[in-house]
Every structure is written in structure tokens, then in C-alpha cells.
Image (cartoon, rainbow, N blue to C red):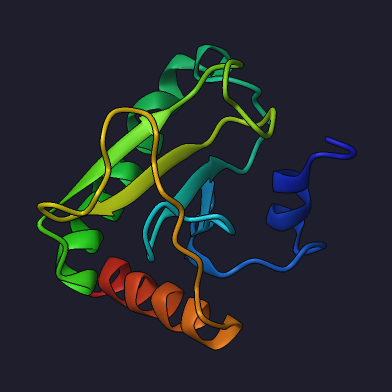
Length: 139
């Protein structure tokens, strides 16, 4: 779709720290992460919301989310993960995306007022993306 930031990332027209590059989906680090390693999973085909995702694609799409959640624990030593998706309300980009966020006890995430933690540099962001990508490709 023309003008969609996530479609531009998928097509390689906009830079992103990719974590997953599958035939049906792409995952990349959020530029405004809740915690380092916060990843966005998007379908390659432009669908605005989860409601728009065709039924046969739901299982494969969320299988990627499940793998990302596991990678948070193995690659980042997270105690767990938070997996979330917004439909229209609070959806900053109108392209279906699932947030997969590493979590740890007492990490400061309370309710829906969450602190944001930036990467110290592009190199640090690239390192997080590589760690997650490696974990996804070598479970």
C-alpha cells in the first residue's frame, strides 16, 4: 500500500532492524521500544487490522509471534514476554502489527502507562535484532 511505513519496510524502501524475514511476515525492532528487543511482527500483505487478516493466515501469523516470544527468553534472557495487538485505537500505523516485548520482574511496566527505553545507538539496536534473529533461526 502506498504511504504505509510498514509496507515500505517490507519492500526494503525504509531501513529497519529486521529480526524475521519469512515469506508471509516480517518482524523488526520497534523504533520506540518499551524495552530493548521490543519487536513488531507484520504480515507482508497489507491488512489494516487483525479482523482483516484472512482466517487461513491467522495460525501461521501467530506461530511467528509464538516463536518471537520464545526468542525473547532465549536470546535476551527475559523471564517472559508481553504480546499485544491494537485494532484502530492506539494503532499508530494502520497496518496489522503485533508487539512482542521482553518482560522481567519489576521492569516498571504497569497498566497501560509504559516507560520507553531507547537504544544507545544504531549498533546496539542491530545487535538486539541479530540476537533475536539468530534465536529464531536456531531454536
